[in-house]
Every structure is written in structure tokens, then in C-alpha cells.
Length: 285
Length: 323
Image 1 (cartoon, rainbow over the protein chains, first blue to last red):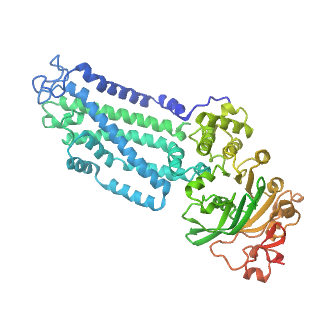
Image 2: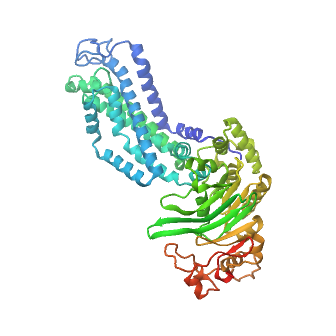
Image 3: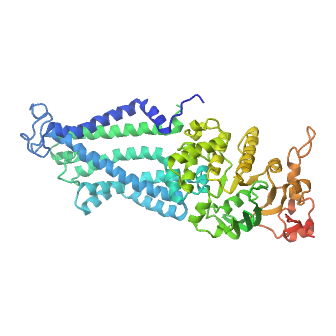
């Protein structure tokens, strides 16, 4: 054969990198990541300290580019460091959600029968609970901390992944190669993890990416409602604490809001690009 | 002692319309290094026999309701699931009909062959990949050192079946079960695969259970043949005896159906066996072949014929041969 043997992942990268929107998303995410990793250290101002007069408008004081909020805290400092908590919570919550979702979906799809019946009903139960309210209840039951918020979001966000994983496992479990592996002596765990899961990964990766975006929005929503750790600055917390003064100091709400928007958009663009890159049926377009 | 002796194996499937008895007291045996052909039309229980031997029947809806599977002195049906996994792939391997989908698309073929060697024989990764390349060479895939790192989609159907055979034989099993290994392949490739299986059998001494509906392949490849019909082994004997003098009317029909068994003038139709396999859910009292049989007697419809032994090493299940 004359064609170069490309591994599936290299091939996926080739398709992904030719997708302009996806590459733009990746660049945006890189900028956001660099901002929150290096920004606070370079800027050197605490987001909780009073840095100037309250309600200083942006671009009026050369020391306070983005102005101050209703307490006189530096908005730029908050924008720089607030991403850490938001994105960290988004990623961890998505990891929790995907872990729960894939485990439940895989067991349901692989074993079928009453296991499937029971797990599918549990999934539906979680699906009909209003997600934000349920997360709020979970957070208020415990003291709001990053860990509690992560688990609260994870516990309400896994159902879509579970259904997707179930469908994939249901399809793949009865394909010939799974039977062949069984006939060559593979056990349940090996079949699920080594034979079936790698083939189910592409849609799950896409779904995981989209959950990251959703989880970031969710964290912002909870912080906005005051249900996050008050000692950790985050974009959601900035919006939440300034919401009563939204007309007097629009900048304290707009800049963190724009950062959330940019981050979620970047993640969604990447997810979309991954969807095209990992779905073999779309390669020939 | 035989390598494999299946005795009175019965399997039932629960269906919407009732319980279907898919295997009814099936008995067959394979000696070391021998090839047994299992023939019969679709739905007669050939594949189920192979799957049941390895306890790979999906349960529910399937269930092994009786019998024993003696393999190398042990009853496979009495083993624990862990012990059974040590038998599958290591002592008994299986290859399937669909080489296009039998390989995992997410791994290179080398990884997949190496997988079973590592699983059963505890080789390191590098040793296992080396062994995989040797196996590719053994199944006559050119340039094995390079192709071992390629993915299944880079192989043609015939090549994939060769890879499957390499995978199945990598652990040097005592028995290879080949479930219609050439059905999905071109005729020329079919011949190559059959030749390859025969060649490897001679080289390694692996016994083969060849499931097929191709009487020609049975005639060329096998030592003994078991003819199955509607969940029964209706006739079993050395292949030469069956071809020379088939005893069961169904076997006679099968041989007459095979193109090339006799010359057919242009425009003349090939012989066929009238009718279809009866429902396995509502079995009558009599012989299941009675409705399609040219030699049917009143007794056939009333009573199931026993397995009789008209000559040593030969059994048949038909009222014509009970004396």
C-alpha cells in the first residue's frame, strides 16, 4: 500500500487542525489559560484588596485599567485570577460527571437486562430533577466550598454522558470483535475497558468537552446566586457580588462575563471540531 | 481418549413464542490433530454447538440444559468462569464468519495478536509483538514486521481472516473452532484460507472443528463429518464413508445439492431439498425431517428415531437404519 499508515489519533488531529473554528477555539482557550496561569503573578494585585475608590470607571485611572467594583476592588485582578476557580471547577466537575456517566452507561449497556433497566431508571430520575435547583440544594446542605460545588455539578451533569455511553456499549458489546475477544478468553472488565471503551471514546470525548462548557456556566450560575466559596475569587462570584450595582458599575460585571463567554465559546468550538475529527463518517466531506 | 467429546449437549432459547430447543442431545467427538466437519443448513445448530462448548451462549435467552463437554479430560461445563477463560483462546480458539468486523478497529493487528499471548502466556510486550509478527508470517502475510503495526482497516477481507487465524493460533491451542471462516470471502480467497488452515493444522497438530455448509470443503479438508439438522446430529462418520454411502436422507440431499457433486447439464436446475427447517418451538413427536423426506414412513411422524450404529464409528438417526 502506498498510503502512509496514520494512527487514528494522528488522522483525527489532521482533520481537527484543518477546521478553522476549532483552531480558533484552541487559540482562545490557550490565551484564557495563559491569562489565568501567569496573569495574577505578573499583575501582582490581590483581587480582594481595596485598590482605589469604589466605582472607578475603566481606563480613567492609569493604575486601574478595568476600574474598581462597588467596594473598590481591582476588577482586572479579579478577571485575571477568577478564571482559576471557574475553570478548575468546570474541569473537575466535568471529570466527575463523565466518570459517573461512563461507569453507569457502560454497565447498563454491557450487561443489559435488569442491570440496564435499573440503571436507566436511575438515570432518568436524575434527568427529570431540575439541575440547578438540585445542585443548589446539595450546596446548601453542606458548607459551600470548591469540592462541594464540584460534586454538586458533577452529580447533576452526568445523565447525558450515561445515555451516550449506554448506547455505544449496547452497540459495541454485540459486535463480532467483542465476541471474538470473549472467545479468546477476555473477561468482563477487560472487554469493557480494553475492547469496547476505546471504540466508544470519540463521542464520549466530544460530550465531555461540552460538559466542561456547561459546568463552567453552572459554576458561574451558582456563584452568581452566592452558592460558592466566598473566599475564592471567581468570575461568577464577581458578577454575583456586583449584580445590585449593575447600572452604576457595568464594568465589574461585563468583563468577567465576557471571560466566561469567551471560555465557554472556546470549549464549544473545540468540542465541535473534535466531533468532526473523531467521527469517521464525516471524514469524507 | 478423544481430545473433545461432546455428549448429549442440549441448549434451549427462550423466545417470545415459547422455549426453542435449539440443540437436542448433540454428541460429537474430535481426536487430537483431526479435523471434524460440522455441516447443515442455516439454523440447524452448528454455531450454537460451538458457542455452547465454549460457554459463550448469551444467557438469557440461551441456556445449556444438559450434557457434558469433555475436553482433554475435564468437563468444560463444570469449570468456573475463571478456569473457562483460561481455556478460551489458550486451549480452544475460535474464528468467526465476519473477518471485516471481528477485529477491534481501535488497535493495530499486532497489538491484538499480542493481547491474547500476553493474557495467556505472560510474555512481555516486546516478546508478544515479536510473536505477533511471527504469526503474521506463519499465515503468509507479506512484510509482517511492517504490517504488524497497521490497523485492521488497512487489510482486505481475506487478509483480516488470516489475521484472525494468526490470533487464534498464537497460543498454540489444541483445538481451533472455525465457524464458517470463508462465508464472507471471495471464492478464490476461500480456497486460500482453507489451504492455510490445512497447512497450519499439519504443522502444529491443532485439531480443527470446521463449521460450514460447503460439502466440497468438507470433502477436501476433514477426517470426520457430523451432519446436523434441526438441533440433532443426524449422521456422523468418517468423511469418505459419508461421501461414498450417505445413510440419512438429509445427508443424501445435502450431497446432491452441492454443485460439482455430479455434472449438471446447462439449463438444468440443481437438486434441492424441498421445504424448510421446522419450528424448533413446536416440535412434534416424530422425526423433524419427516415433512421433507422422500422415504417417510408412518412411524417417522409418530416417534423420534434413536441414534443407531450401523457400522463401528458411524452413527445415524433414522428409522431406515435402525436394524
